[in-house]
Length: 112
Image 1: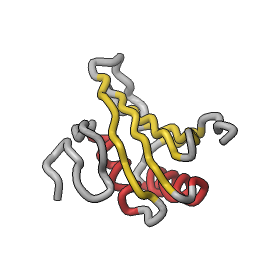
Image 2: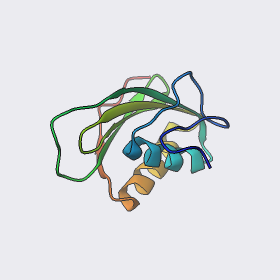
Image 3: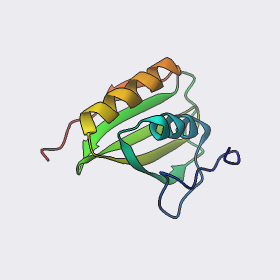
């Protein structure tokens, strides 16, 4: 089990391994998806205006992969997910996120 707030090894790539709690939950969902080949956590934005609503994730097709934009009560993080089957991976991640209590949104798909 990874240390709290970090994800690395296996499908995880890139130099940045720290994740906000909400993004950690989404990364775990993506990691369990057999269609996902690589997960790359992005930089964190903290100290945002407090959001008292549910945690949110926005899924957007991007360059043959998926950009996940994750927001919790005071933080935001983007995660890039690489996959051989974008549609199946998006569906699996969206279902897992919904079942974990996230509010789901879909961004405009890129033309590729």
